Length: 400
Image 1 (cartoon, rainbow, N blue to C red):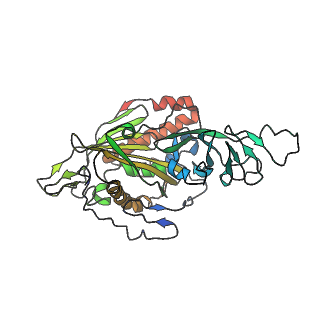
Image 2 (cartoon, rainbow, N blue to C red; image 1 turned 90 degrees about the vertical axis):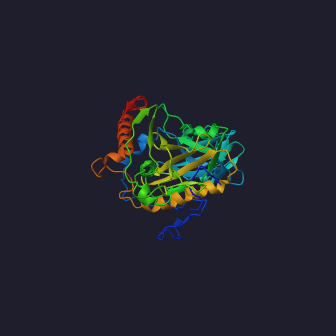
């Protein structure tokens, strides 16, 4: 059993409202619940979190697919595969030996290139057969007369694209000093990293991050799993802002209980409480959570909710633990329980993206989210001034 983790006796229960439907996939003990399709925005002019726009977050890297789902999308294993990032339709394809990202729009008549196919190292549009090389340049127009030149404007808009952690990452705007977030467990030979199934939730990326770093809901939203009354007060630990991330600790109120081989909420006066967990919140939307259960046992959880649009996100995540003989399903099952408890709460937010500073009421225990929101607003203002100003804002240091 995974003795560094929570109680293996926890049952998996779906919320009563989360039954099977045309649009809700209720999940299983090893797969979190999700919505099958995007939920339409409250209004066409819906802002991104904190009144920002998509333009601010285009300077950052976001995963758009796992390598596994990309390889399985077509028989060739090379795409093309269409997806949406920050309200913009893009296509991913392997061309010239590398996975590339382009606007999912043929410059001829605007048809989706995701319906085309890979031909050698090129991408051919299914509508009129226009063909593009790995640089996005059109190299063939079947309807052109012999000897007619290909128009110089016949090329695709390309985007920065990299593969890391078996995820395909895309950045829509270059220029700022941004990089794919660091994930320490991935390269640690003493850690086992288990990829979770990505899940689509009808909330903004900011709402998902806020839920992930909010420990004050544990006593109520996760009674019996991550907490429970009377443990409702959380110490506001110091927060360090540096190198594009926030670092802070939070109390867990988890314990090693006598007679139980695993961890969970304290069951009595003889329970041995664990130390606080550590969070790294890499701006704007990546969270890495560290738990140290003993001198030899630890876990990490990595989560990035990619903004599909202002009110829908798709989360990519890993659960990692010190090498042992425990099965992957055991660790995935715990996360599925936690996420199943979270989904109805997060999906109920009104509005589905975070509003202005005076639209909600915060208390001192909300300190990590308050500081994150403050820096998010600063980053958005900096992005409006250009990539150099944004890069400088990311390097600002502070102690709270």
